[in-house]
Length: 89
Image (cartoon, rainbow, N blue to C red; front, side, top):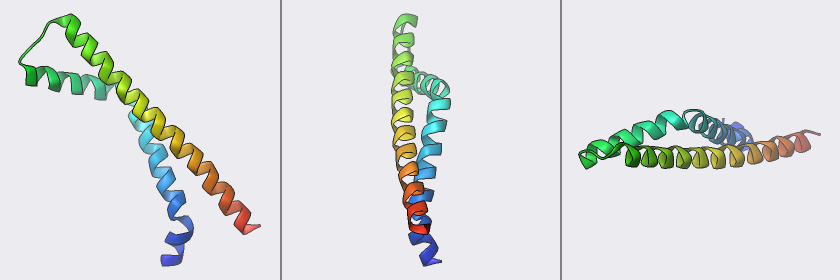
């Protein structure tokens, strides 16, 4: 079992990062809208233009975070698959 984790642990870790990045990117609008609504509730209210501005900033920050996670996950995933295929040859 320990040898399996040692051999495939990094591959599994990169798959998790890739999936997390994909889902954060896919649901960035929902996550951004929820975060903006929570911020609106904590502030006690604001005008519509300011709310839309804050909501778009939350959405963009989620898109950036998801994109970074997806990029890093895919990069390390390809690297680990290459390393595994090189070791098996």
